Length: 134
Image (cartoon, rainbow, N blue to C red; front, side):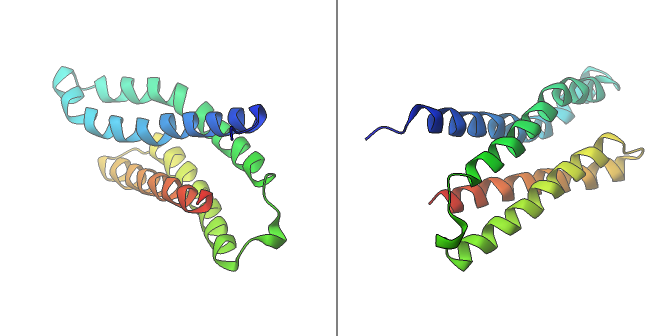
């Protein structure tokens, strides 16, 4: 049986936004070294270009995440499911906060720290989303 059209739209938007937000961070991580060989300002220019796509994707993730919650009845979910959901919400906020602080970092150490926080939290949120969908 096929999913209803609105459910398909909701899930497609969520997965597409996750691909941009999470996948984009992984791609950016791999591009920093080669970008430095192009020029000292190249990583920053790439990061700014990525941010123009990443932040709207983050907003779509949050909006469709709440939309996804509307498809579930809280009282029928197990306590494990609820715990994973709460943890996911925390790591989604942490991912956004880490990315926000990464953009405002003034040292290489801060860039590395907050980039790592955002990337790790983003991957954790993705894995938790898969657990919740199961």
